[in-house]
Length: 222
Ligand code: G3P
Image (tube, rainbow, N blue to C red; front, side):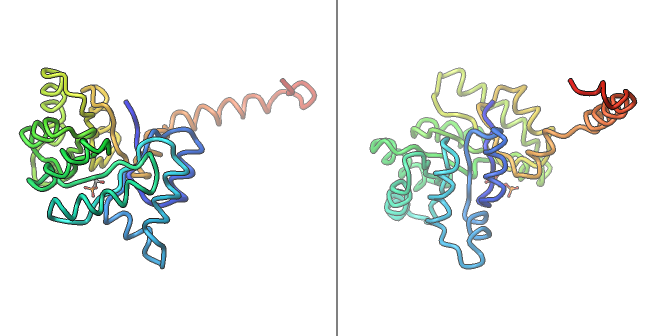
């Protein structure tokens, strides 16, 4: 399963990229506005992200009608070859998605909350579908059940659209996504580092180092 970082913060992105842990980045208007908060230029931030991570970088249009989504998306796509345009799962979003596909611009259809929405996005030629599991959990609906449905539907009809699990809140979401065969999950930095850490690993290292230190100094070099 591919792991994307859900962030527009360059320091966090560089750390995860340097560790070789990520295959791409997703941003959204909230994340980009936060990163650009103290005077940064969102376009410049996206350009730097695209230089830092060679995989797909999702950049979202901030528009409601298809024409404006197309105008804005074409501008965003000029920033770098690895930019993927994110559009919301609305009637206009799917119209824009079809047009982008015809222009060979990859699209991530976002804010997906149902299997029927995911089916329509795949038929519109989306490269990625982003179902928001955490926000479904927030309203007492099982977000991961939706992932199972979408994976099954896409398999049934051999859709090329990749299932990109979004609104991930904790490591269990990631484990479930991988077990269900989702293509990718986009993960906030805090959860990415939670995937790596285990207290028994730390304790084990501590024990090995302590035992090794009991050897006389001159025999410790390996
Ligand atoms: O990038 C979209 C998504 O991952 C947002 O997550 O935590 O705001 O629901 P969240």
